[in-house]
Length: 371
Image 1: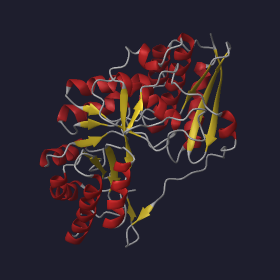
Image 2: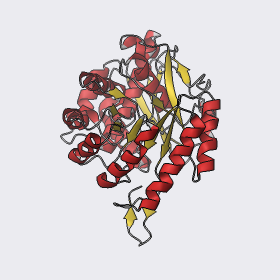
Image 3: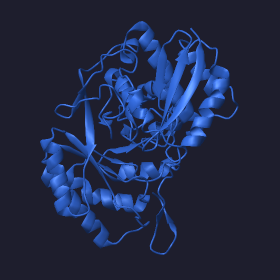
Image 4: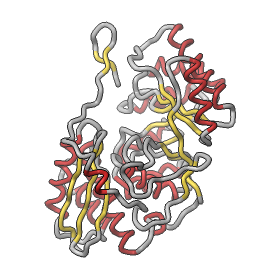
């Protein structure tokens, strides 16, 4: 079997799908994307295609090593995301050839259902309370919310009180049996994160995500040591090498590698195993499309230290058979490969030119804030 073509498709609202063709008619799907850099990532996929065309798609690890190591420059969001989507497509082809879901090839499932969380929150306490109640009534056992935009390095007491009031209302809506994760989104400096975490501890959050930007692991460690709330990070880290220092220094209890950024199925499998040796769990990051989610579910199914799965689409309008959740869980996929069939007629209608920019956020004084 040989790879014959790599086809990238820009799909609304901001995704890139990869369709990998072979000379035996098997097709593999992946989702190589850096949000806001779709065209750049797609270009990297096609440049990697110079090596891949004519290769046997079943030699997944060989190709991963060749694409990651042989170009002299390694890592980073563009190269790793291009590699991630390619890796997903290779695993999809291998599973389809064997007639097995990817998780079966990786050792088989360790669970029957995969826990997912949904978004919740609002700009007022009443909105937060209603949102939490709606998530609970829909059967979810976990939700995630976030801090407002344009958080200053050191915020006022009024800011803290207002945010805590909304989180208390969210907790009222969910009840104590639903977990609440809070995404700081890297918008908050370490000093302010420590203050916020102390105020939020009575609500027992599931975790605080990205309490500061990931470049300085020591700052992350400082926050982690200041609170009893578990710290999560990883959506902007790439390959096991990017996670090494976080684990060694105790910067997080929950790792969030993204299957479309961190190195694909192959590499996130290794990251999860590393995390297990430090008694850390993984909660794969996935604010992306249904192919990325399908890849996550394969890892979730066979990973002992899996915690909970992010998702923003269940595949309606993209997949022939969308995912379904029941009581806040998705059944372990049974279909071959990634376990999905892309609705190509539907995505044809959603094609666009790939032009999407990450929103920019500004402080009141006109300076740039972290988004």
